[in-house]
Length: 140
Image (cartoon, rainbow, N blue to C red; front, top):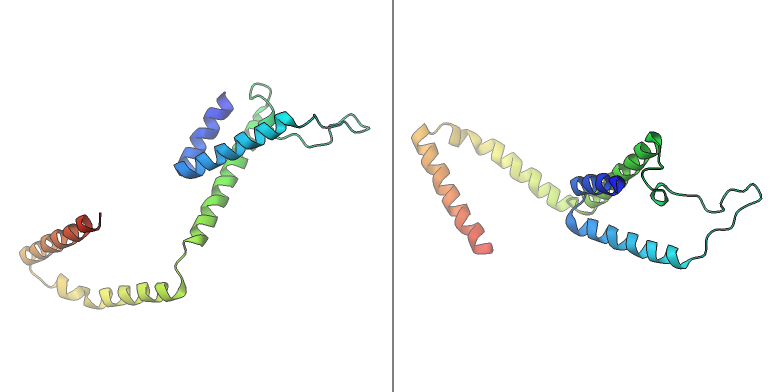
């Protein structure tokens, strides 16, 4: 129970709701197939043939090292997912070039706004917020 709580808490920090639901569905499917599968045969040394994972043990039986390893595994899985998501959504070279060009233009023209009196700057900022706010409301 504590393991599930800690796991859910960590996953909620690093994964969005859809990803957590997919993970839970995969775990449920894995649990159903495990229940249907016969227990693994023991080898000559008496050890089970399949390696036992941390998720197979109740939290009360696990030691501090095993709990720490479980947390590390959860964090590693979350980090891997985040890395994949970043790579998937990375800007393509053409888009990145446009962004860099826009930033360069912004830097070169920034002095014009900086030279305006404070009152005019505030009015300009207000007008820009009103214009962008209307555009954003129109997109919804």
